[in-house]
Length: 144
Image (tube, rainbow, N blue to C red; front, top):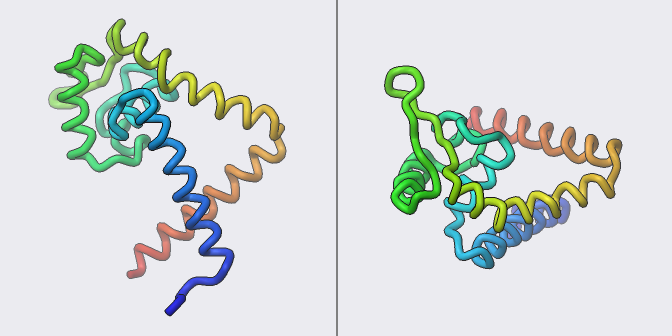
């Protein structure tokens, strides 16, 4: 039994397809999805963001981020420094910056070319529509 309409099925397919592209990029660069997402977030937001912010911006579960950070730290890709009491900030090492440049930065450059090609109006419309969809989804889930 189908519960969704054609538009919803198309949206779900497009979300899954985009997720697949990011997964394929991680595989191409021999990175786990979580390591890729962490490096991506650090490149977009800047080295030195807090773990709580990294969890929020990466969209990964807290435990996944913590496990990936331990591995990336052991591999010399990043370091964790204490900020306020128990809070920690995440910093790319020199090796981490080099890895990011060889991997996630290449994907970010593709994304930037796409957005530049779209122009400001189309990019803004996409962002606004996605933000509204996410807001309404969050509100709907809160009522469950």
